[in-house]
Amino acid sequence: MSCLTLAAYDRSNLDPVLDYYGKIHQGALKTYTFDCERLEGSEFAYVFPDNSPDSKAGSIVHENAHLTLNGSTKDLAYRQTRAQAFVVCNSIAATMNAESDKYFAENSPALA
Image 1 (cartoon, one colour):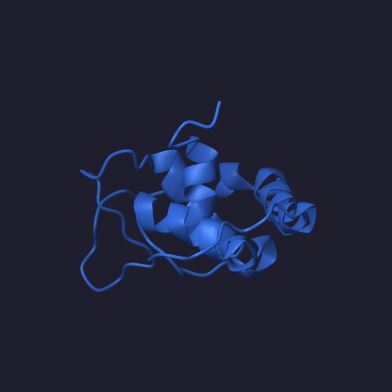
Image 2 (cartoon, rainbow, N blue to C red):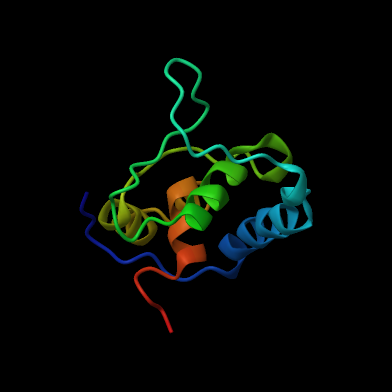
């Protein structure tokens, strides 16, 4: 993915992200059951456990962001490089990309 211009920062892009991060934080994560074993034919989500820097916590953020009550994010760009390029090229749509949320939560690549 490539784009010709860097998207300008727009504070309004931050608001929906803060909204569903808040919803994930307020949600009942303690009542969820996370089964990290792969069960053939019954997956609701899937991760590649050997892919770094993906983390279990980042995957939980990614999958929780998909829930309707948390933001209904989509899978628009996978993997760190594509998610980064997506943010630069289409910052508005990137706010609805679950993978972007995951990497933001992981701070990967490190922002500070």
